[in-house]
Image 1 (spheres, rainbow, N blue to C red):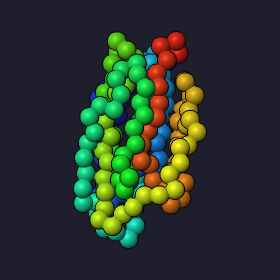
Image 2: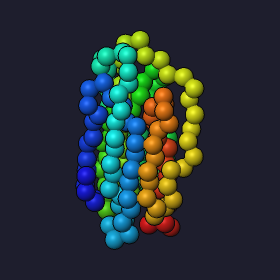
Image 3: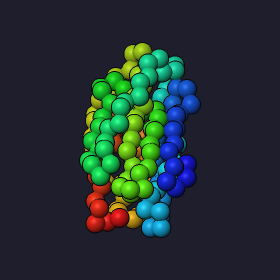
Image 4: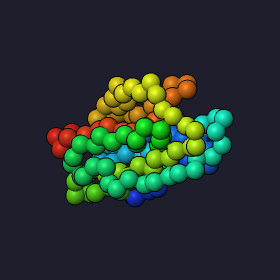
Length: 138
């Protein structure tokens, strides 16, 4: 994706998001995003997918988790130059026979203007995202 642009990312069949990276630019007051996926073994391809509506509003809090038994397999995001913020949709997917357990919330993965490089621990998958916007930090 590019600064100030809308983007959609989807993992290949049978994979879920495992790495989330971003880099901030003070000039555009935006981030470019990169995602990496990893296989979810032993259960074949995902059989059920859905896109959420927007899970946050510009300048608002984002706090969304896919329902139990589903993991994140994609993101859609658009940037507002007026708000200098992004809003997000999340693609949640499920495989027949898959359950999720041992849920935990990671610490914040980046500082305001800092880079993000979040790698999901082995045998874990992303179920959601949390974040908030601060107009003073733009």
